[in-house]
Length: 315
Image (tube, rainbow, N blue to C red; front, side, top):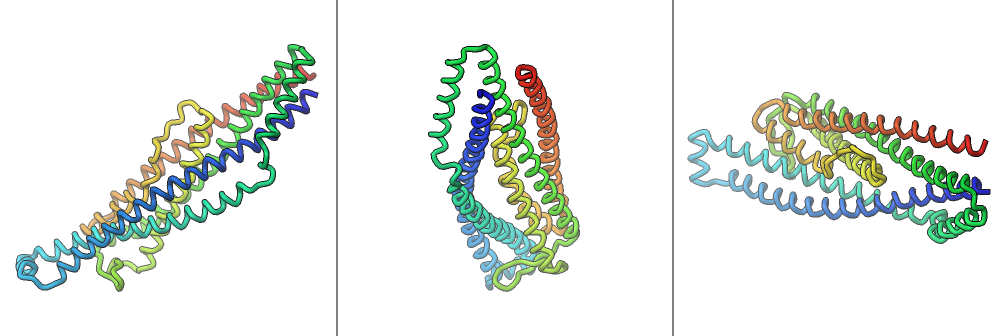
């Protein structure tokens, strides 16, 4: 009888954990959406400012004429163009991320209407009372011990699932970073930027599509990193010791990469700094996934031990 009650309790607990995870993700997405909105506005204002600076350089003035004579005009213009390009890329990335987060949030809100999760707290309270009554009416040491073991097994099952989901998200992040690194490798060596219709930018020796591909690869890596960060928060929610990941360490990945790209390209240099940042982030993801795999192995060993104790009592 107790085994049946604990089985139903375990199933209900797993559903509650799933629902709570969705609720946590909803809160995280709302916070990220608010933050990315502020960043988008900030980058847009920066882009407008840099555009005005470039326009001033292109207009006739005696100061600009003097700079042209002394060879300083092109250097200053290139610096302003690189700052404008960086602001434009970060604003475009922020707008893409807003769309991604809004779509994710819409999916989450739909998922929360799951009929299985309706009145789940009331059902949980009912099954807890049923279990308490059974243990009280059958005051046997084995009953209390089994109850504790079933509860521990349920917690381990939840931890097992959360770690596996975090590892899966980490694998996606690794592949996305590796692809972004490949796109940057393809773009390495190209450095000269020029104005493009509508105020955009292209590399004169680089196809426009190459830049778009690189930008899209960085965006996908950013999305994958934020998903990985969310999964890690779920794992730490159930207190995995020694799993250290700085909060927000993956959130501003794209900003740093775009800063590196445009500063390096505007200086006619290889984009080693940008590649280095992607490689560092990739190594951090790999190290975190390795730690998660160790934790998964330890969790599986504990699950086996708990099951052996349960079998010994029942058998």
